[in-house]
Image (cartoon, rainbow over all chains, first blue to last red; front, top):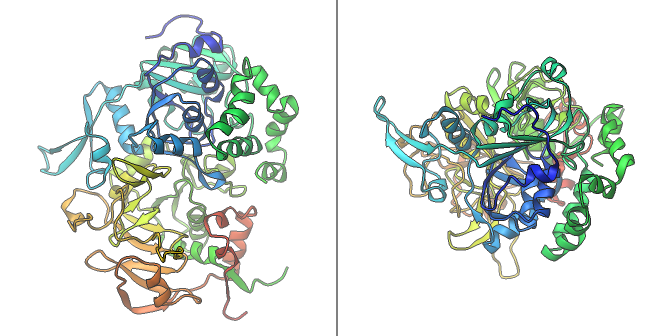
Length: 306
Length: 284
C-alpha cells in the first residue's frame, strides 16, 4: 500500500526507482500514451538488463532496445504498423541475441496479470497449446481439467517489478485519471510491485474525482507532473501523435545502430539534460501547438499524417 | 463526379474480406490491418448492419472513423464509438465463444492455415525477427471463425531461381493455429472454442478450406490464373470444383472505401506493382 499524502517527485527521482534487471511493464499501446519522457530519463540514467512485458508496443520498446537497456523482451508485438513497418532497433537487438526473445500473446499476458491481481498461482486458458509459444515459455504448464476432462494451459501469475505509466491527470495523493483506452494500464498497476507515473497535469482531488478515478491512489508509488510526457506518441485529447518526429526517429534507426546513437540518442536523449530541453529540441511551443490543434478540423488532423 | 468504372486490387481485397463477415456477430479488426479495418466498415454499411464492430487497439465499438490512420490506436479511428471494451473484456468474449470472427495474417501461412509472425530462422539463430502476433495466438483458437488475409502471396524468383513463399510448406514458428498441426494432428484434438479459418483472401485470389482442413483455391481475380497462383504457392494446390472469378464491388462501395481512406493507408499493404492493378467494373 502506498499511502503517503503527497507522491510528487522529480522525473529523475521517479525513474531512479527502477533497478537494473527489473521486470518492467510499460503502459499505453502502439502510438498512444507511451511514457516516453520517463523512458528517455531511464536511458540517461543508464538502467540496464530490463525484462519488458506488454501487449502491442512500438517506439517505446524500440527506443530502449536501441539504447541497450533491454535483456529480454516478452512483448506480444513491437512495430510501427503500416506507418513505418518493423521496429528496427528491436529487430536488430533480437537478431544479434542482445535481447532474448520471449514473445507472449495478449490474453496469456492478461491472464498472468489477473492471477497476480487475484493472488492466485496461475490462470487457465484454452489457447496457446498447438503453437510454438510453449517452447518460448517453459513455465506454462498443461493440465487436464478435473471438471471437464479438457486439456488446458496454465499461465503463472506475473507481478512486474515496475509498471511505468503516463496518465492525463493525478491528484497529489496519486489517484489517476486516464482518458480514452486504458490498454493494459489498469491491470499493470494492480499487478505490479511499484507503479511509477508521469502525468500531463496534477490537479486538486475534487477536480480529479469529478473526472473519475481510473486507478486508486494506494496502488501508485510516485508521480511526476510531465506535460507532453508521451511525446512523440499521442495523449489525446491534449495532443496528437507526432508522425514527423517519429519519421526522423525511424530514419536514424534505419541507417544502423551507430547512426541511431549519433542522430537520435545524442541530440534527443543524452544531449537533453531534462524533459524541457527535449521539448525545445523537437520544435518547442510551435511544434507542440501544431499537435494540440488536431481538433480544429479534419483537414488539420489529416495533415499530421501526410 | 465521374462515375467509378474500375476498382483497384486493394478495393477488391477489401470487398472479398467484407464478404466473409456475417451480420449480427461481434468481430474485431485488430491493428496493423487497414484492409481489414475498411472491410469491417464496408460490411457494416453494406450487408451486415448488426455487426458489433470492435476497433483494434482502442476497443471502441461501432466507431465512425474521421479517416483511416496508419496507427490504429488513434482517436481518429475511434471517433463516436458507441461504447468501449477493455483489453480483458474483448479477450474474455473470445474465450467464452462470443467473438464471431477474427482476421489474422502471417509472413508464412501453411496449408492448414497455421501462421508465423514471430520469427524466421530457428531456436538457435533468428534470421528475421518479425513484430509478433499481438493476441493472434489466443484468438486463432478462441474466435468462432477466422479470415486469413495477405497482400503478398505473389512470389518472385531470385537470381538462383529460389522463392520465399508466403503460402509456405512449413512455418518456421507457429504463432497462430489453423486446422491441423504441422504433423497433421487435427484441431478437434484441442479444446479450442472456434472452428478455425474458413477463407484466405490474397492478392492473387480467394481460398476456402476443404474437409481435411487444407487450403483450396475457390476464386480467381480477373487477371490471375490457377497456374500463376500455383507458381506462388509452395504447397500442393487443390482447386474447388466450382472455381469462379471473384465478384467485384459496386461503385457505391468503392466510393465509400475511398471516402473513409483518403490517405490511401490500405495501399501500404500492397506491393508497389500491385498498387497499379485494377479491374473494369461490369456495366462500365
